[in-house]
Image (tube, rainbow, N blue to C red; front, side, top):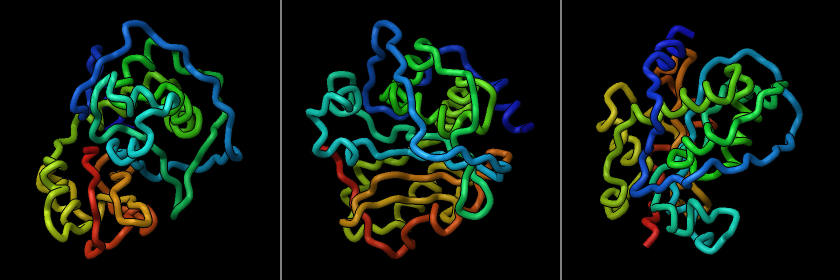
Length: 233
């Protein structure tokens, strides 16, 4: 909790722009969708955290004309690289707390500030309800901590990396670790689809929000596994 307090003290009042190629915020706050739980409430001690980062070009592949994902995928609001899928509390082993009871809901202004970090109002509302409420007391705090963790990251050139011949999961982890001292391969999880295309990076942290080894499930494919990165071209 000391690390969380330190993160909050460093929070800036202005919106974080995240790792977006381009991004334009909507001119006014948007409505916040109501979220219905998709599973049972699960209360348990928090043992660490996972910052899940979705590779937007891969997510948007085939969704360019989707109304539900227009902000992220149409190009009208910008072009995105990695965006925040969510900040998730971990439990023991491969389990995690979820859908903790709360009466707090995200307000439109707070959601708007996050739309260059997570360009989907419904996803933001869902992540708070399913995960954030098990971590902190308010959506505003959850979003601020998420932005601070994300803004602390440095990004290698994934477009260039995608052109590397015989690219492996180990290469992706090594490139990220070189750009971010303190991170090592065992704390950098990857999620790929059945064809080996990179879908997400999942950064594993302890309770102090420092890098920590991922469990086998969160780590994903071994370093030797082949990986491909879609550039959205």
